[in-house]
Image (cartoon, rainbow, N blue to C red; front, side, top):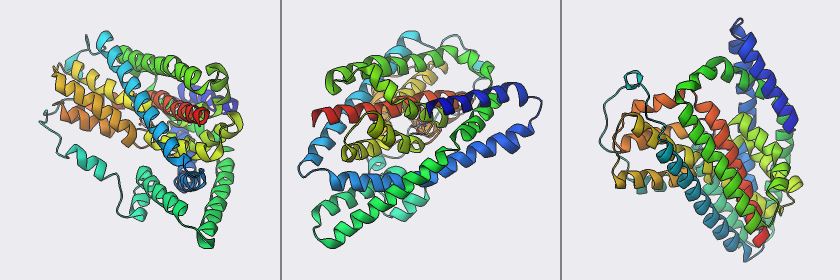
Length: 394
Ligand code: ASP
């Protein structure tokens, strides 16, 4: 599958670079609708699939195992996210990519003093009061929190009706997996569409002035993916990092081409099972929660971006403001949705909180997609690393 997706990306890139400039209708009437339809078909199946996977994962974990698995996964999530943000902050401070860029061309706007939602409310608001409304808003994290509650309740219920519910959820899960397999047959075409639009709209020249920033983000992602994950795989999962990355290639290819951890979840679950041989109940639980709550690449990107914008706008950050950025970025790794571009509103809020104009995020918008593809790949690899580590311990 990874090869078919790479073929789709290459075709899309060639069409975007060489054909689209002479035939703009190719982007508007063919590539954009093809890419958008593919993403919609995938995302429409993912929310019920993720909820079903989580209910099953929690309901089926052996008695006594759930607490251990959950706390180990949580501990690793916090540790790996903090490391990712640390690596990013270190690089952006040392390289200082914001220097030497012409400030007159930056989007202007009034700096704003403070963010108005108290941070504690951000956490309270993660829990929905209406699951249908949460689903209708596309709030995957909210729906998953309800699924956790249902899974826990199923574990405590005994008797025939609860068993029938689990059978029903298993049936739903099996059918949605087949649905995703059908949609994934369209992946090369969908991915070609997404890449064609990206190349036709951005072009590589859009990246040039910000090359140092791009290098910092990609460098930090590579350090986290190779050095930090390599060490975790070696020491905790007792696996060869090379064999691990070879086995998860299809998930990395889907993550890179769709820029969505949520859309990648079905492939992530599949490679955990067929490529890595992880226990299905454990993998369903850890990977489903991870797709929305463990986003190392996103946390890293959010921290690096705000520090970069501060450098760019010449805003000197106090120690407490820098600490706020680091802490909020780590928390945002949990709270950012697994869909394309989900980091941007978080960055806008963080930028505002440290006194940058909200418009400053405009600097990042033009080429966000390319970096989104890279950070999403790290997000998905991180989920699988944690699942492999927890599997090895249990
Ligand atoms: N696209 C990312 C993901 O799906 C989220 C983000 O950083 O924008 O994991």
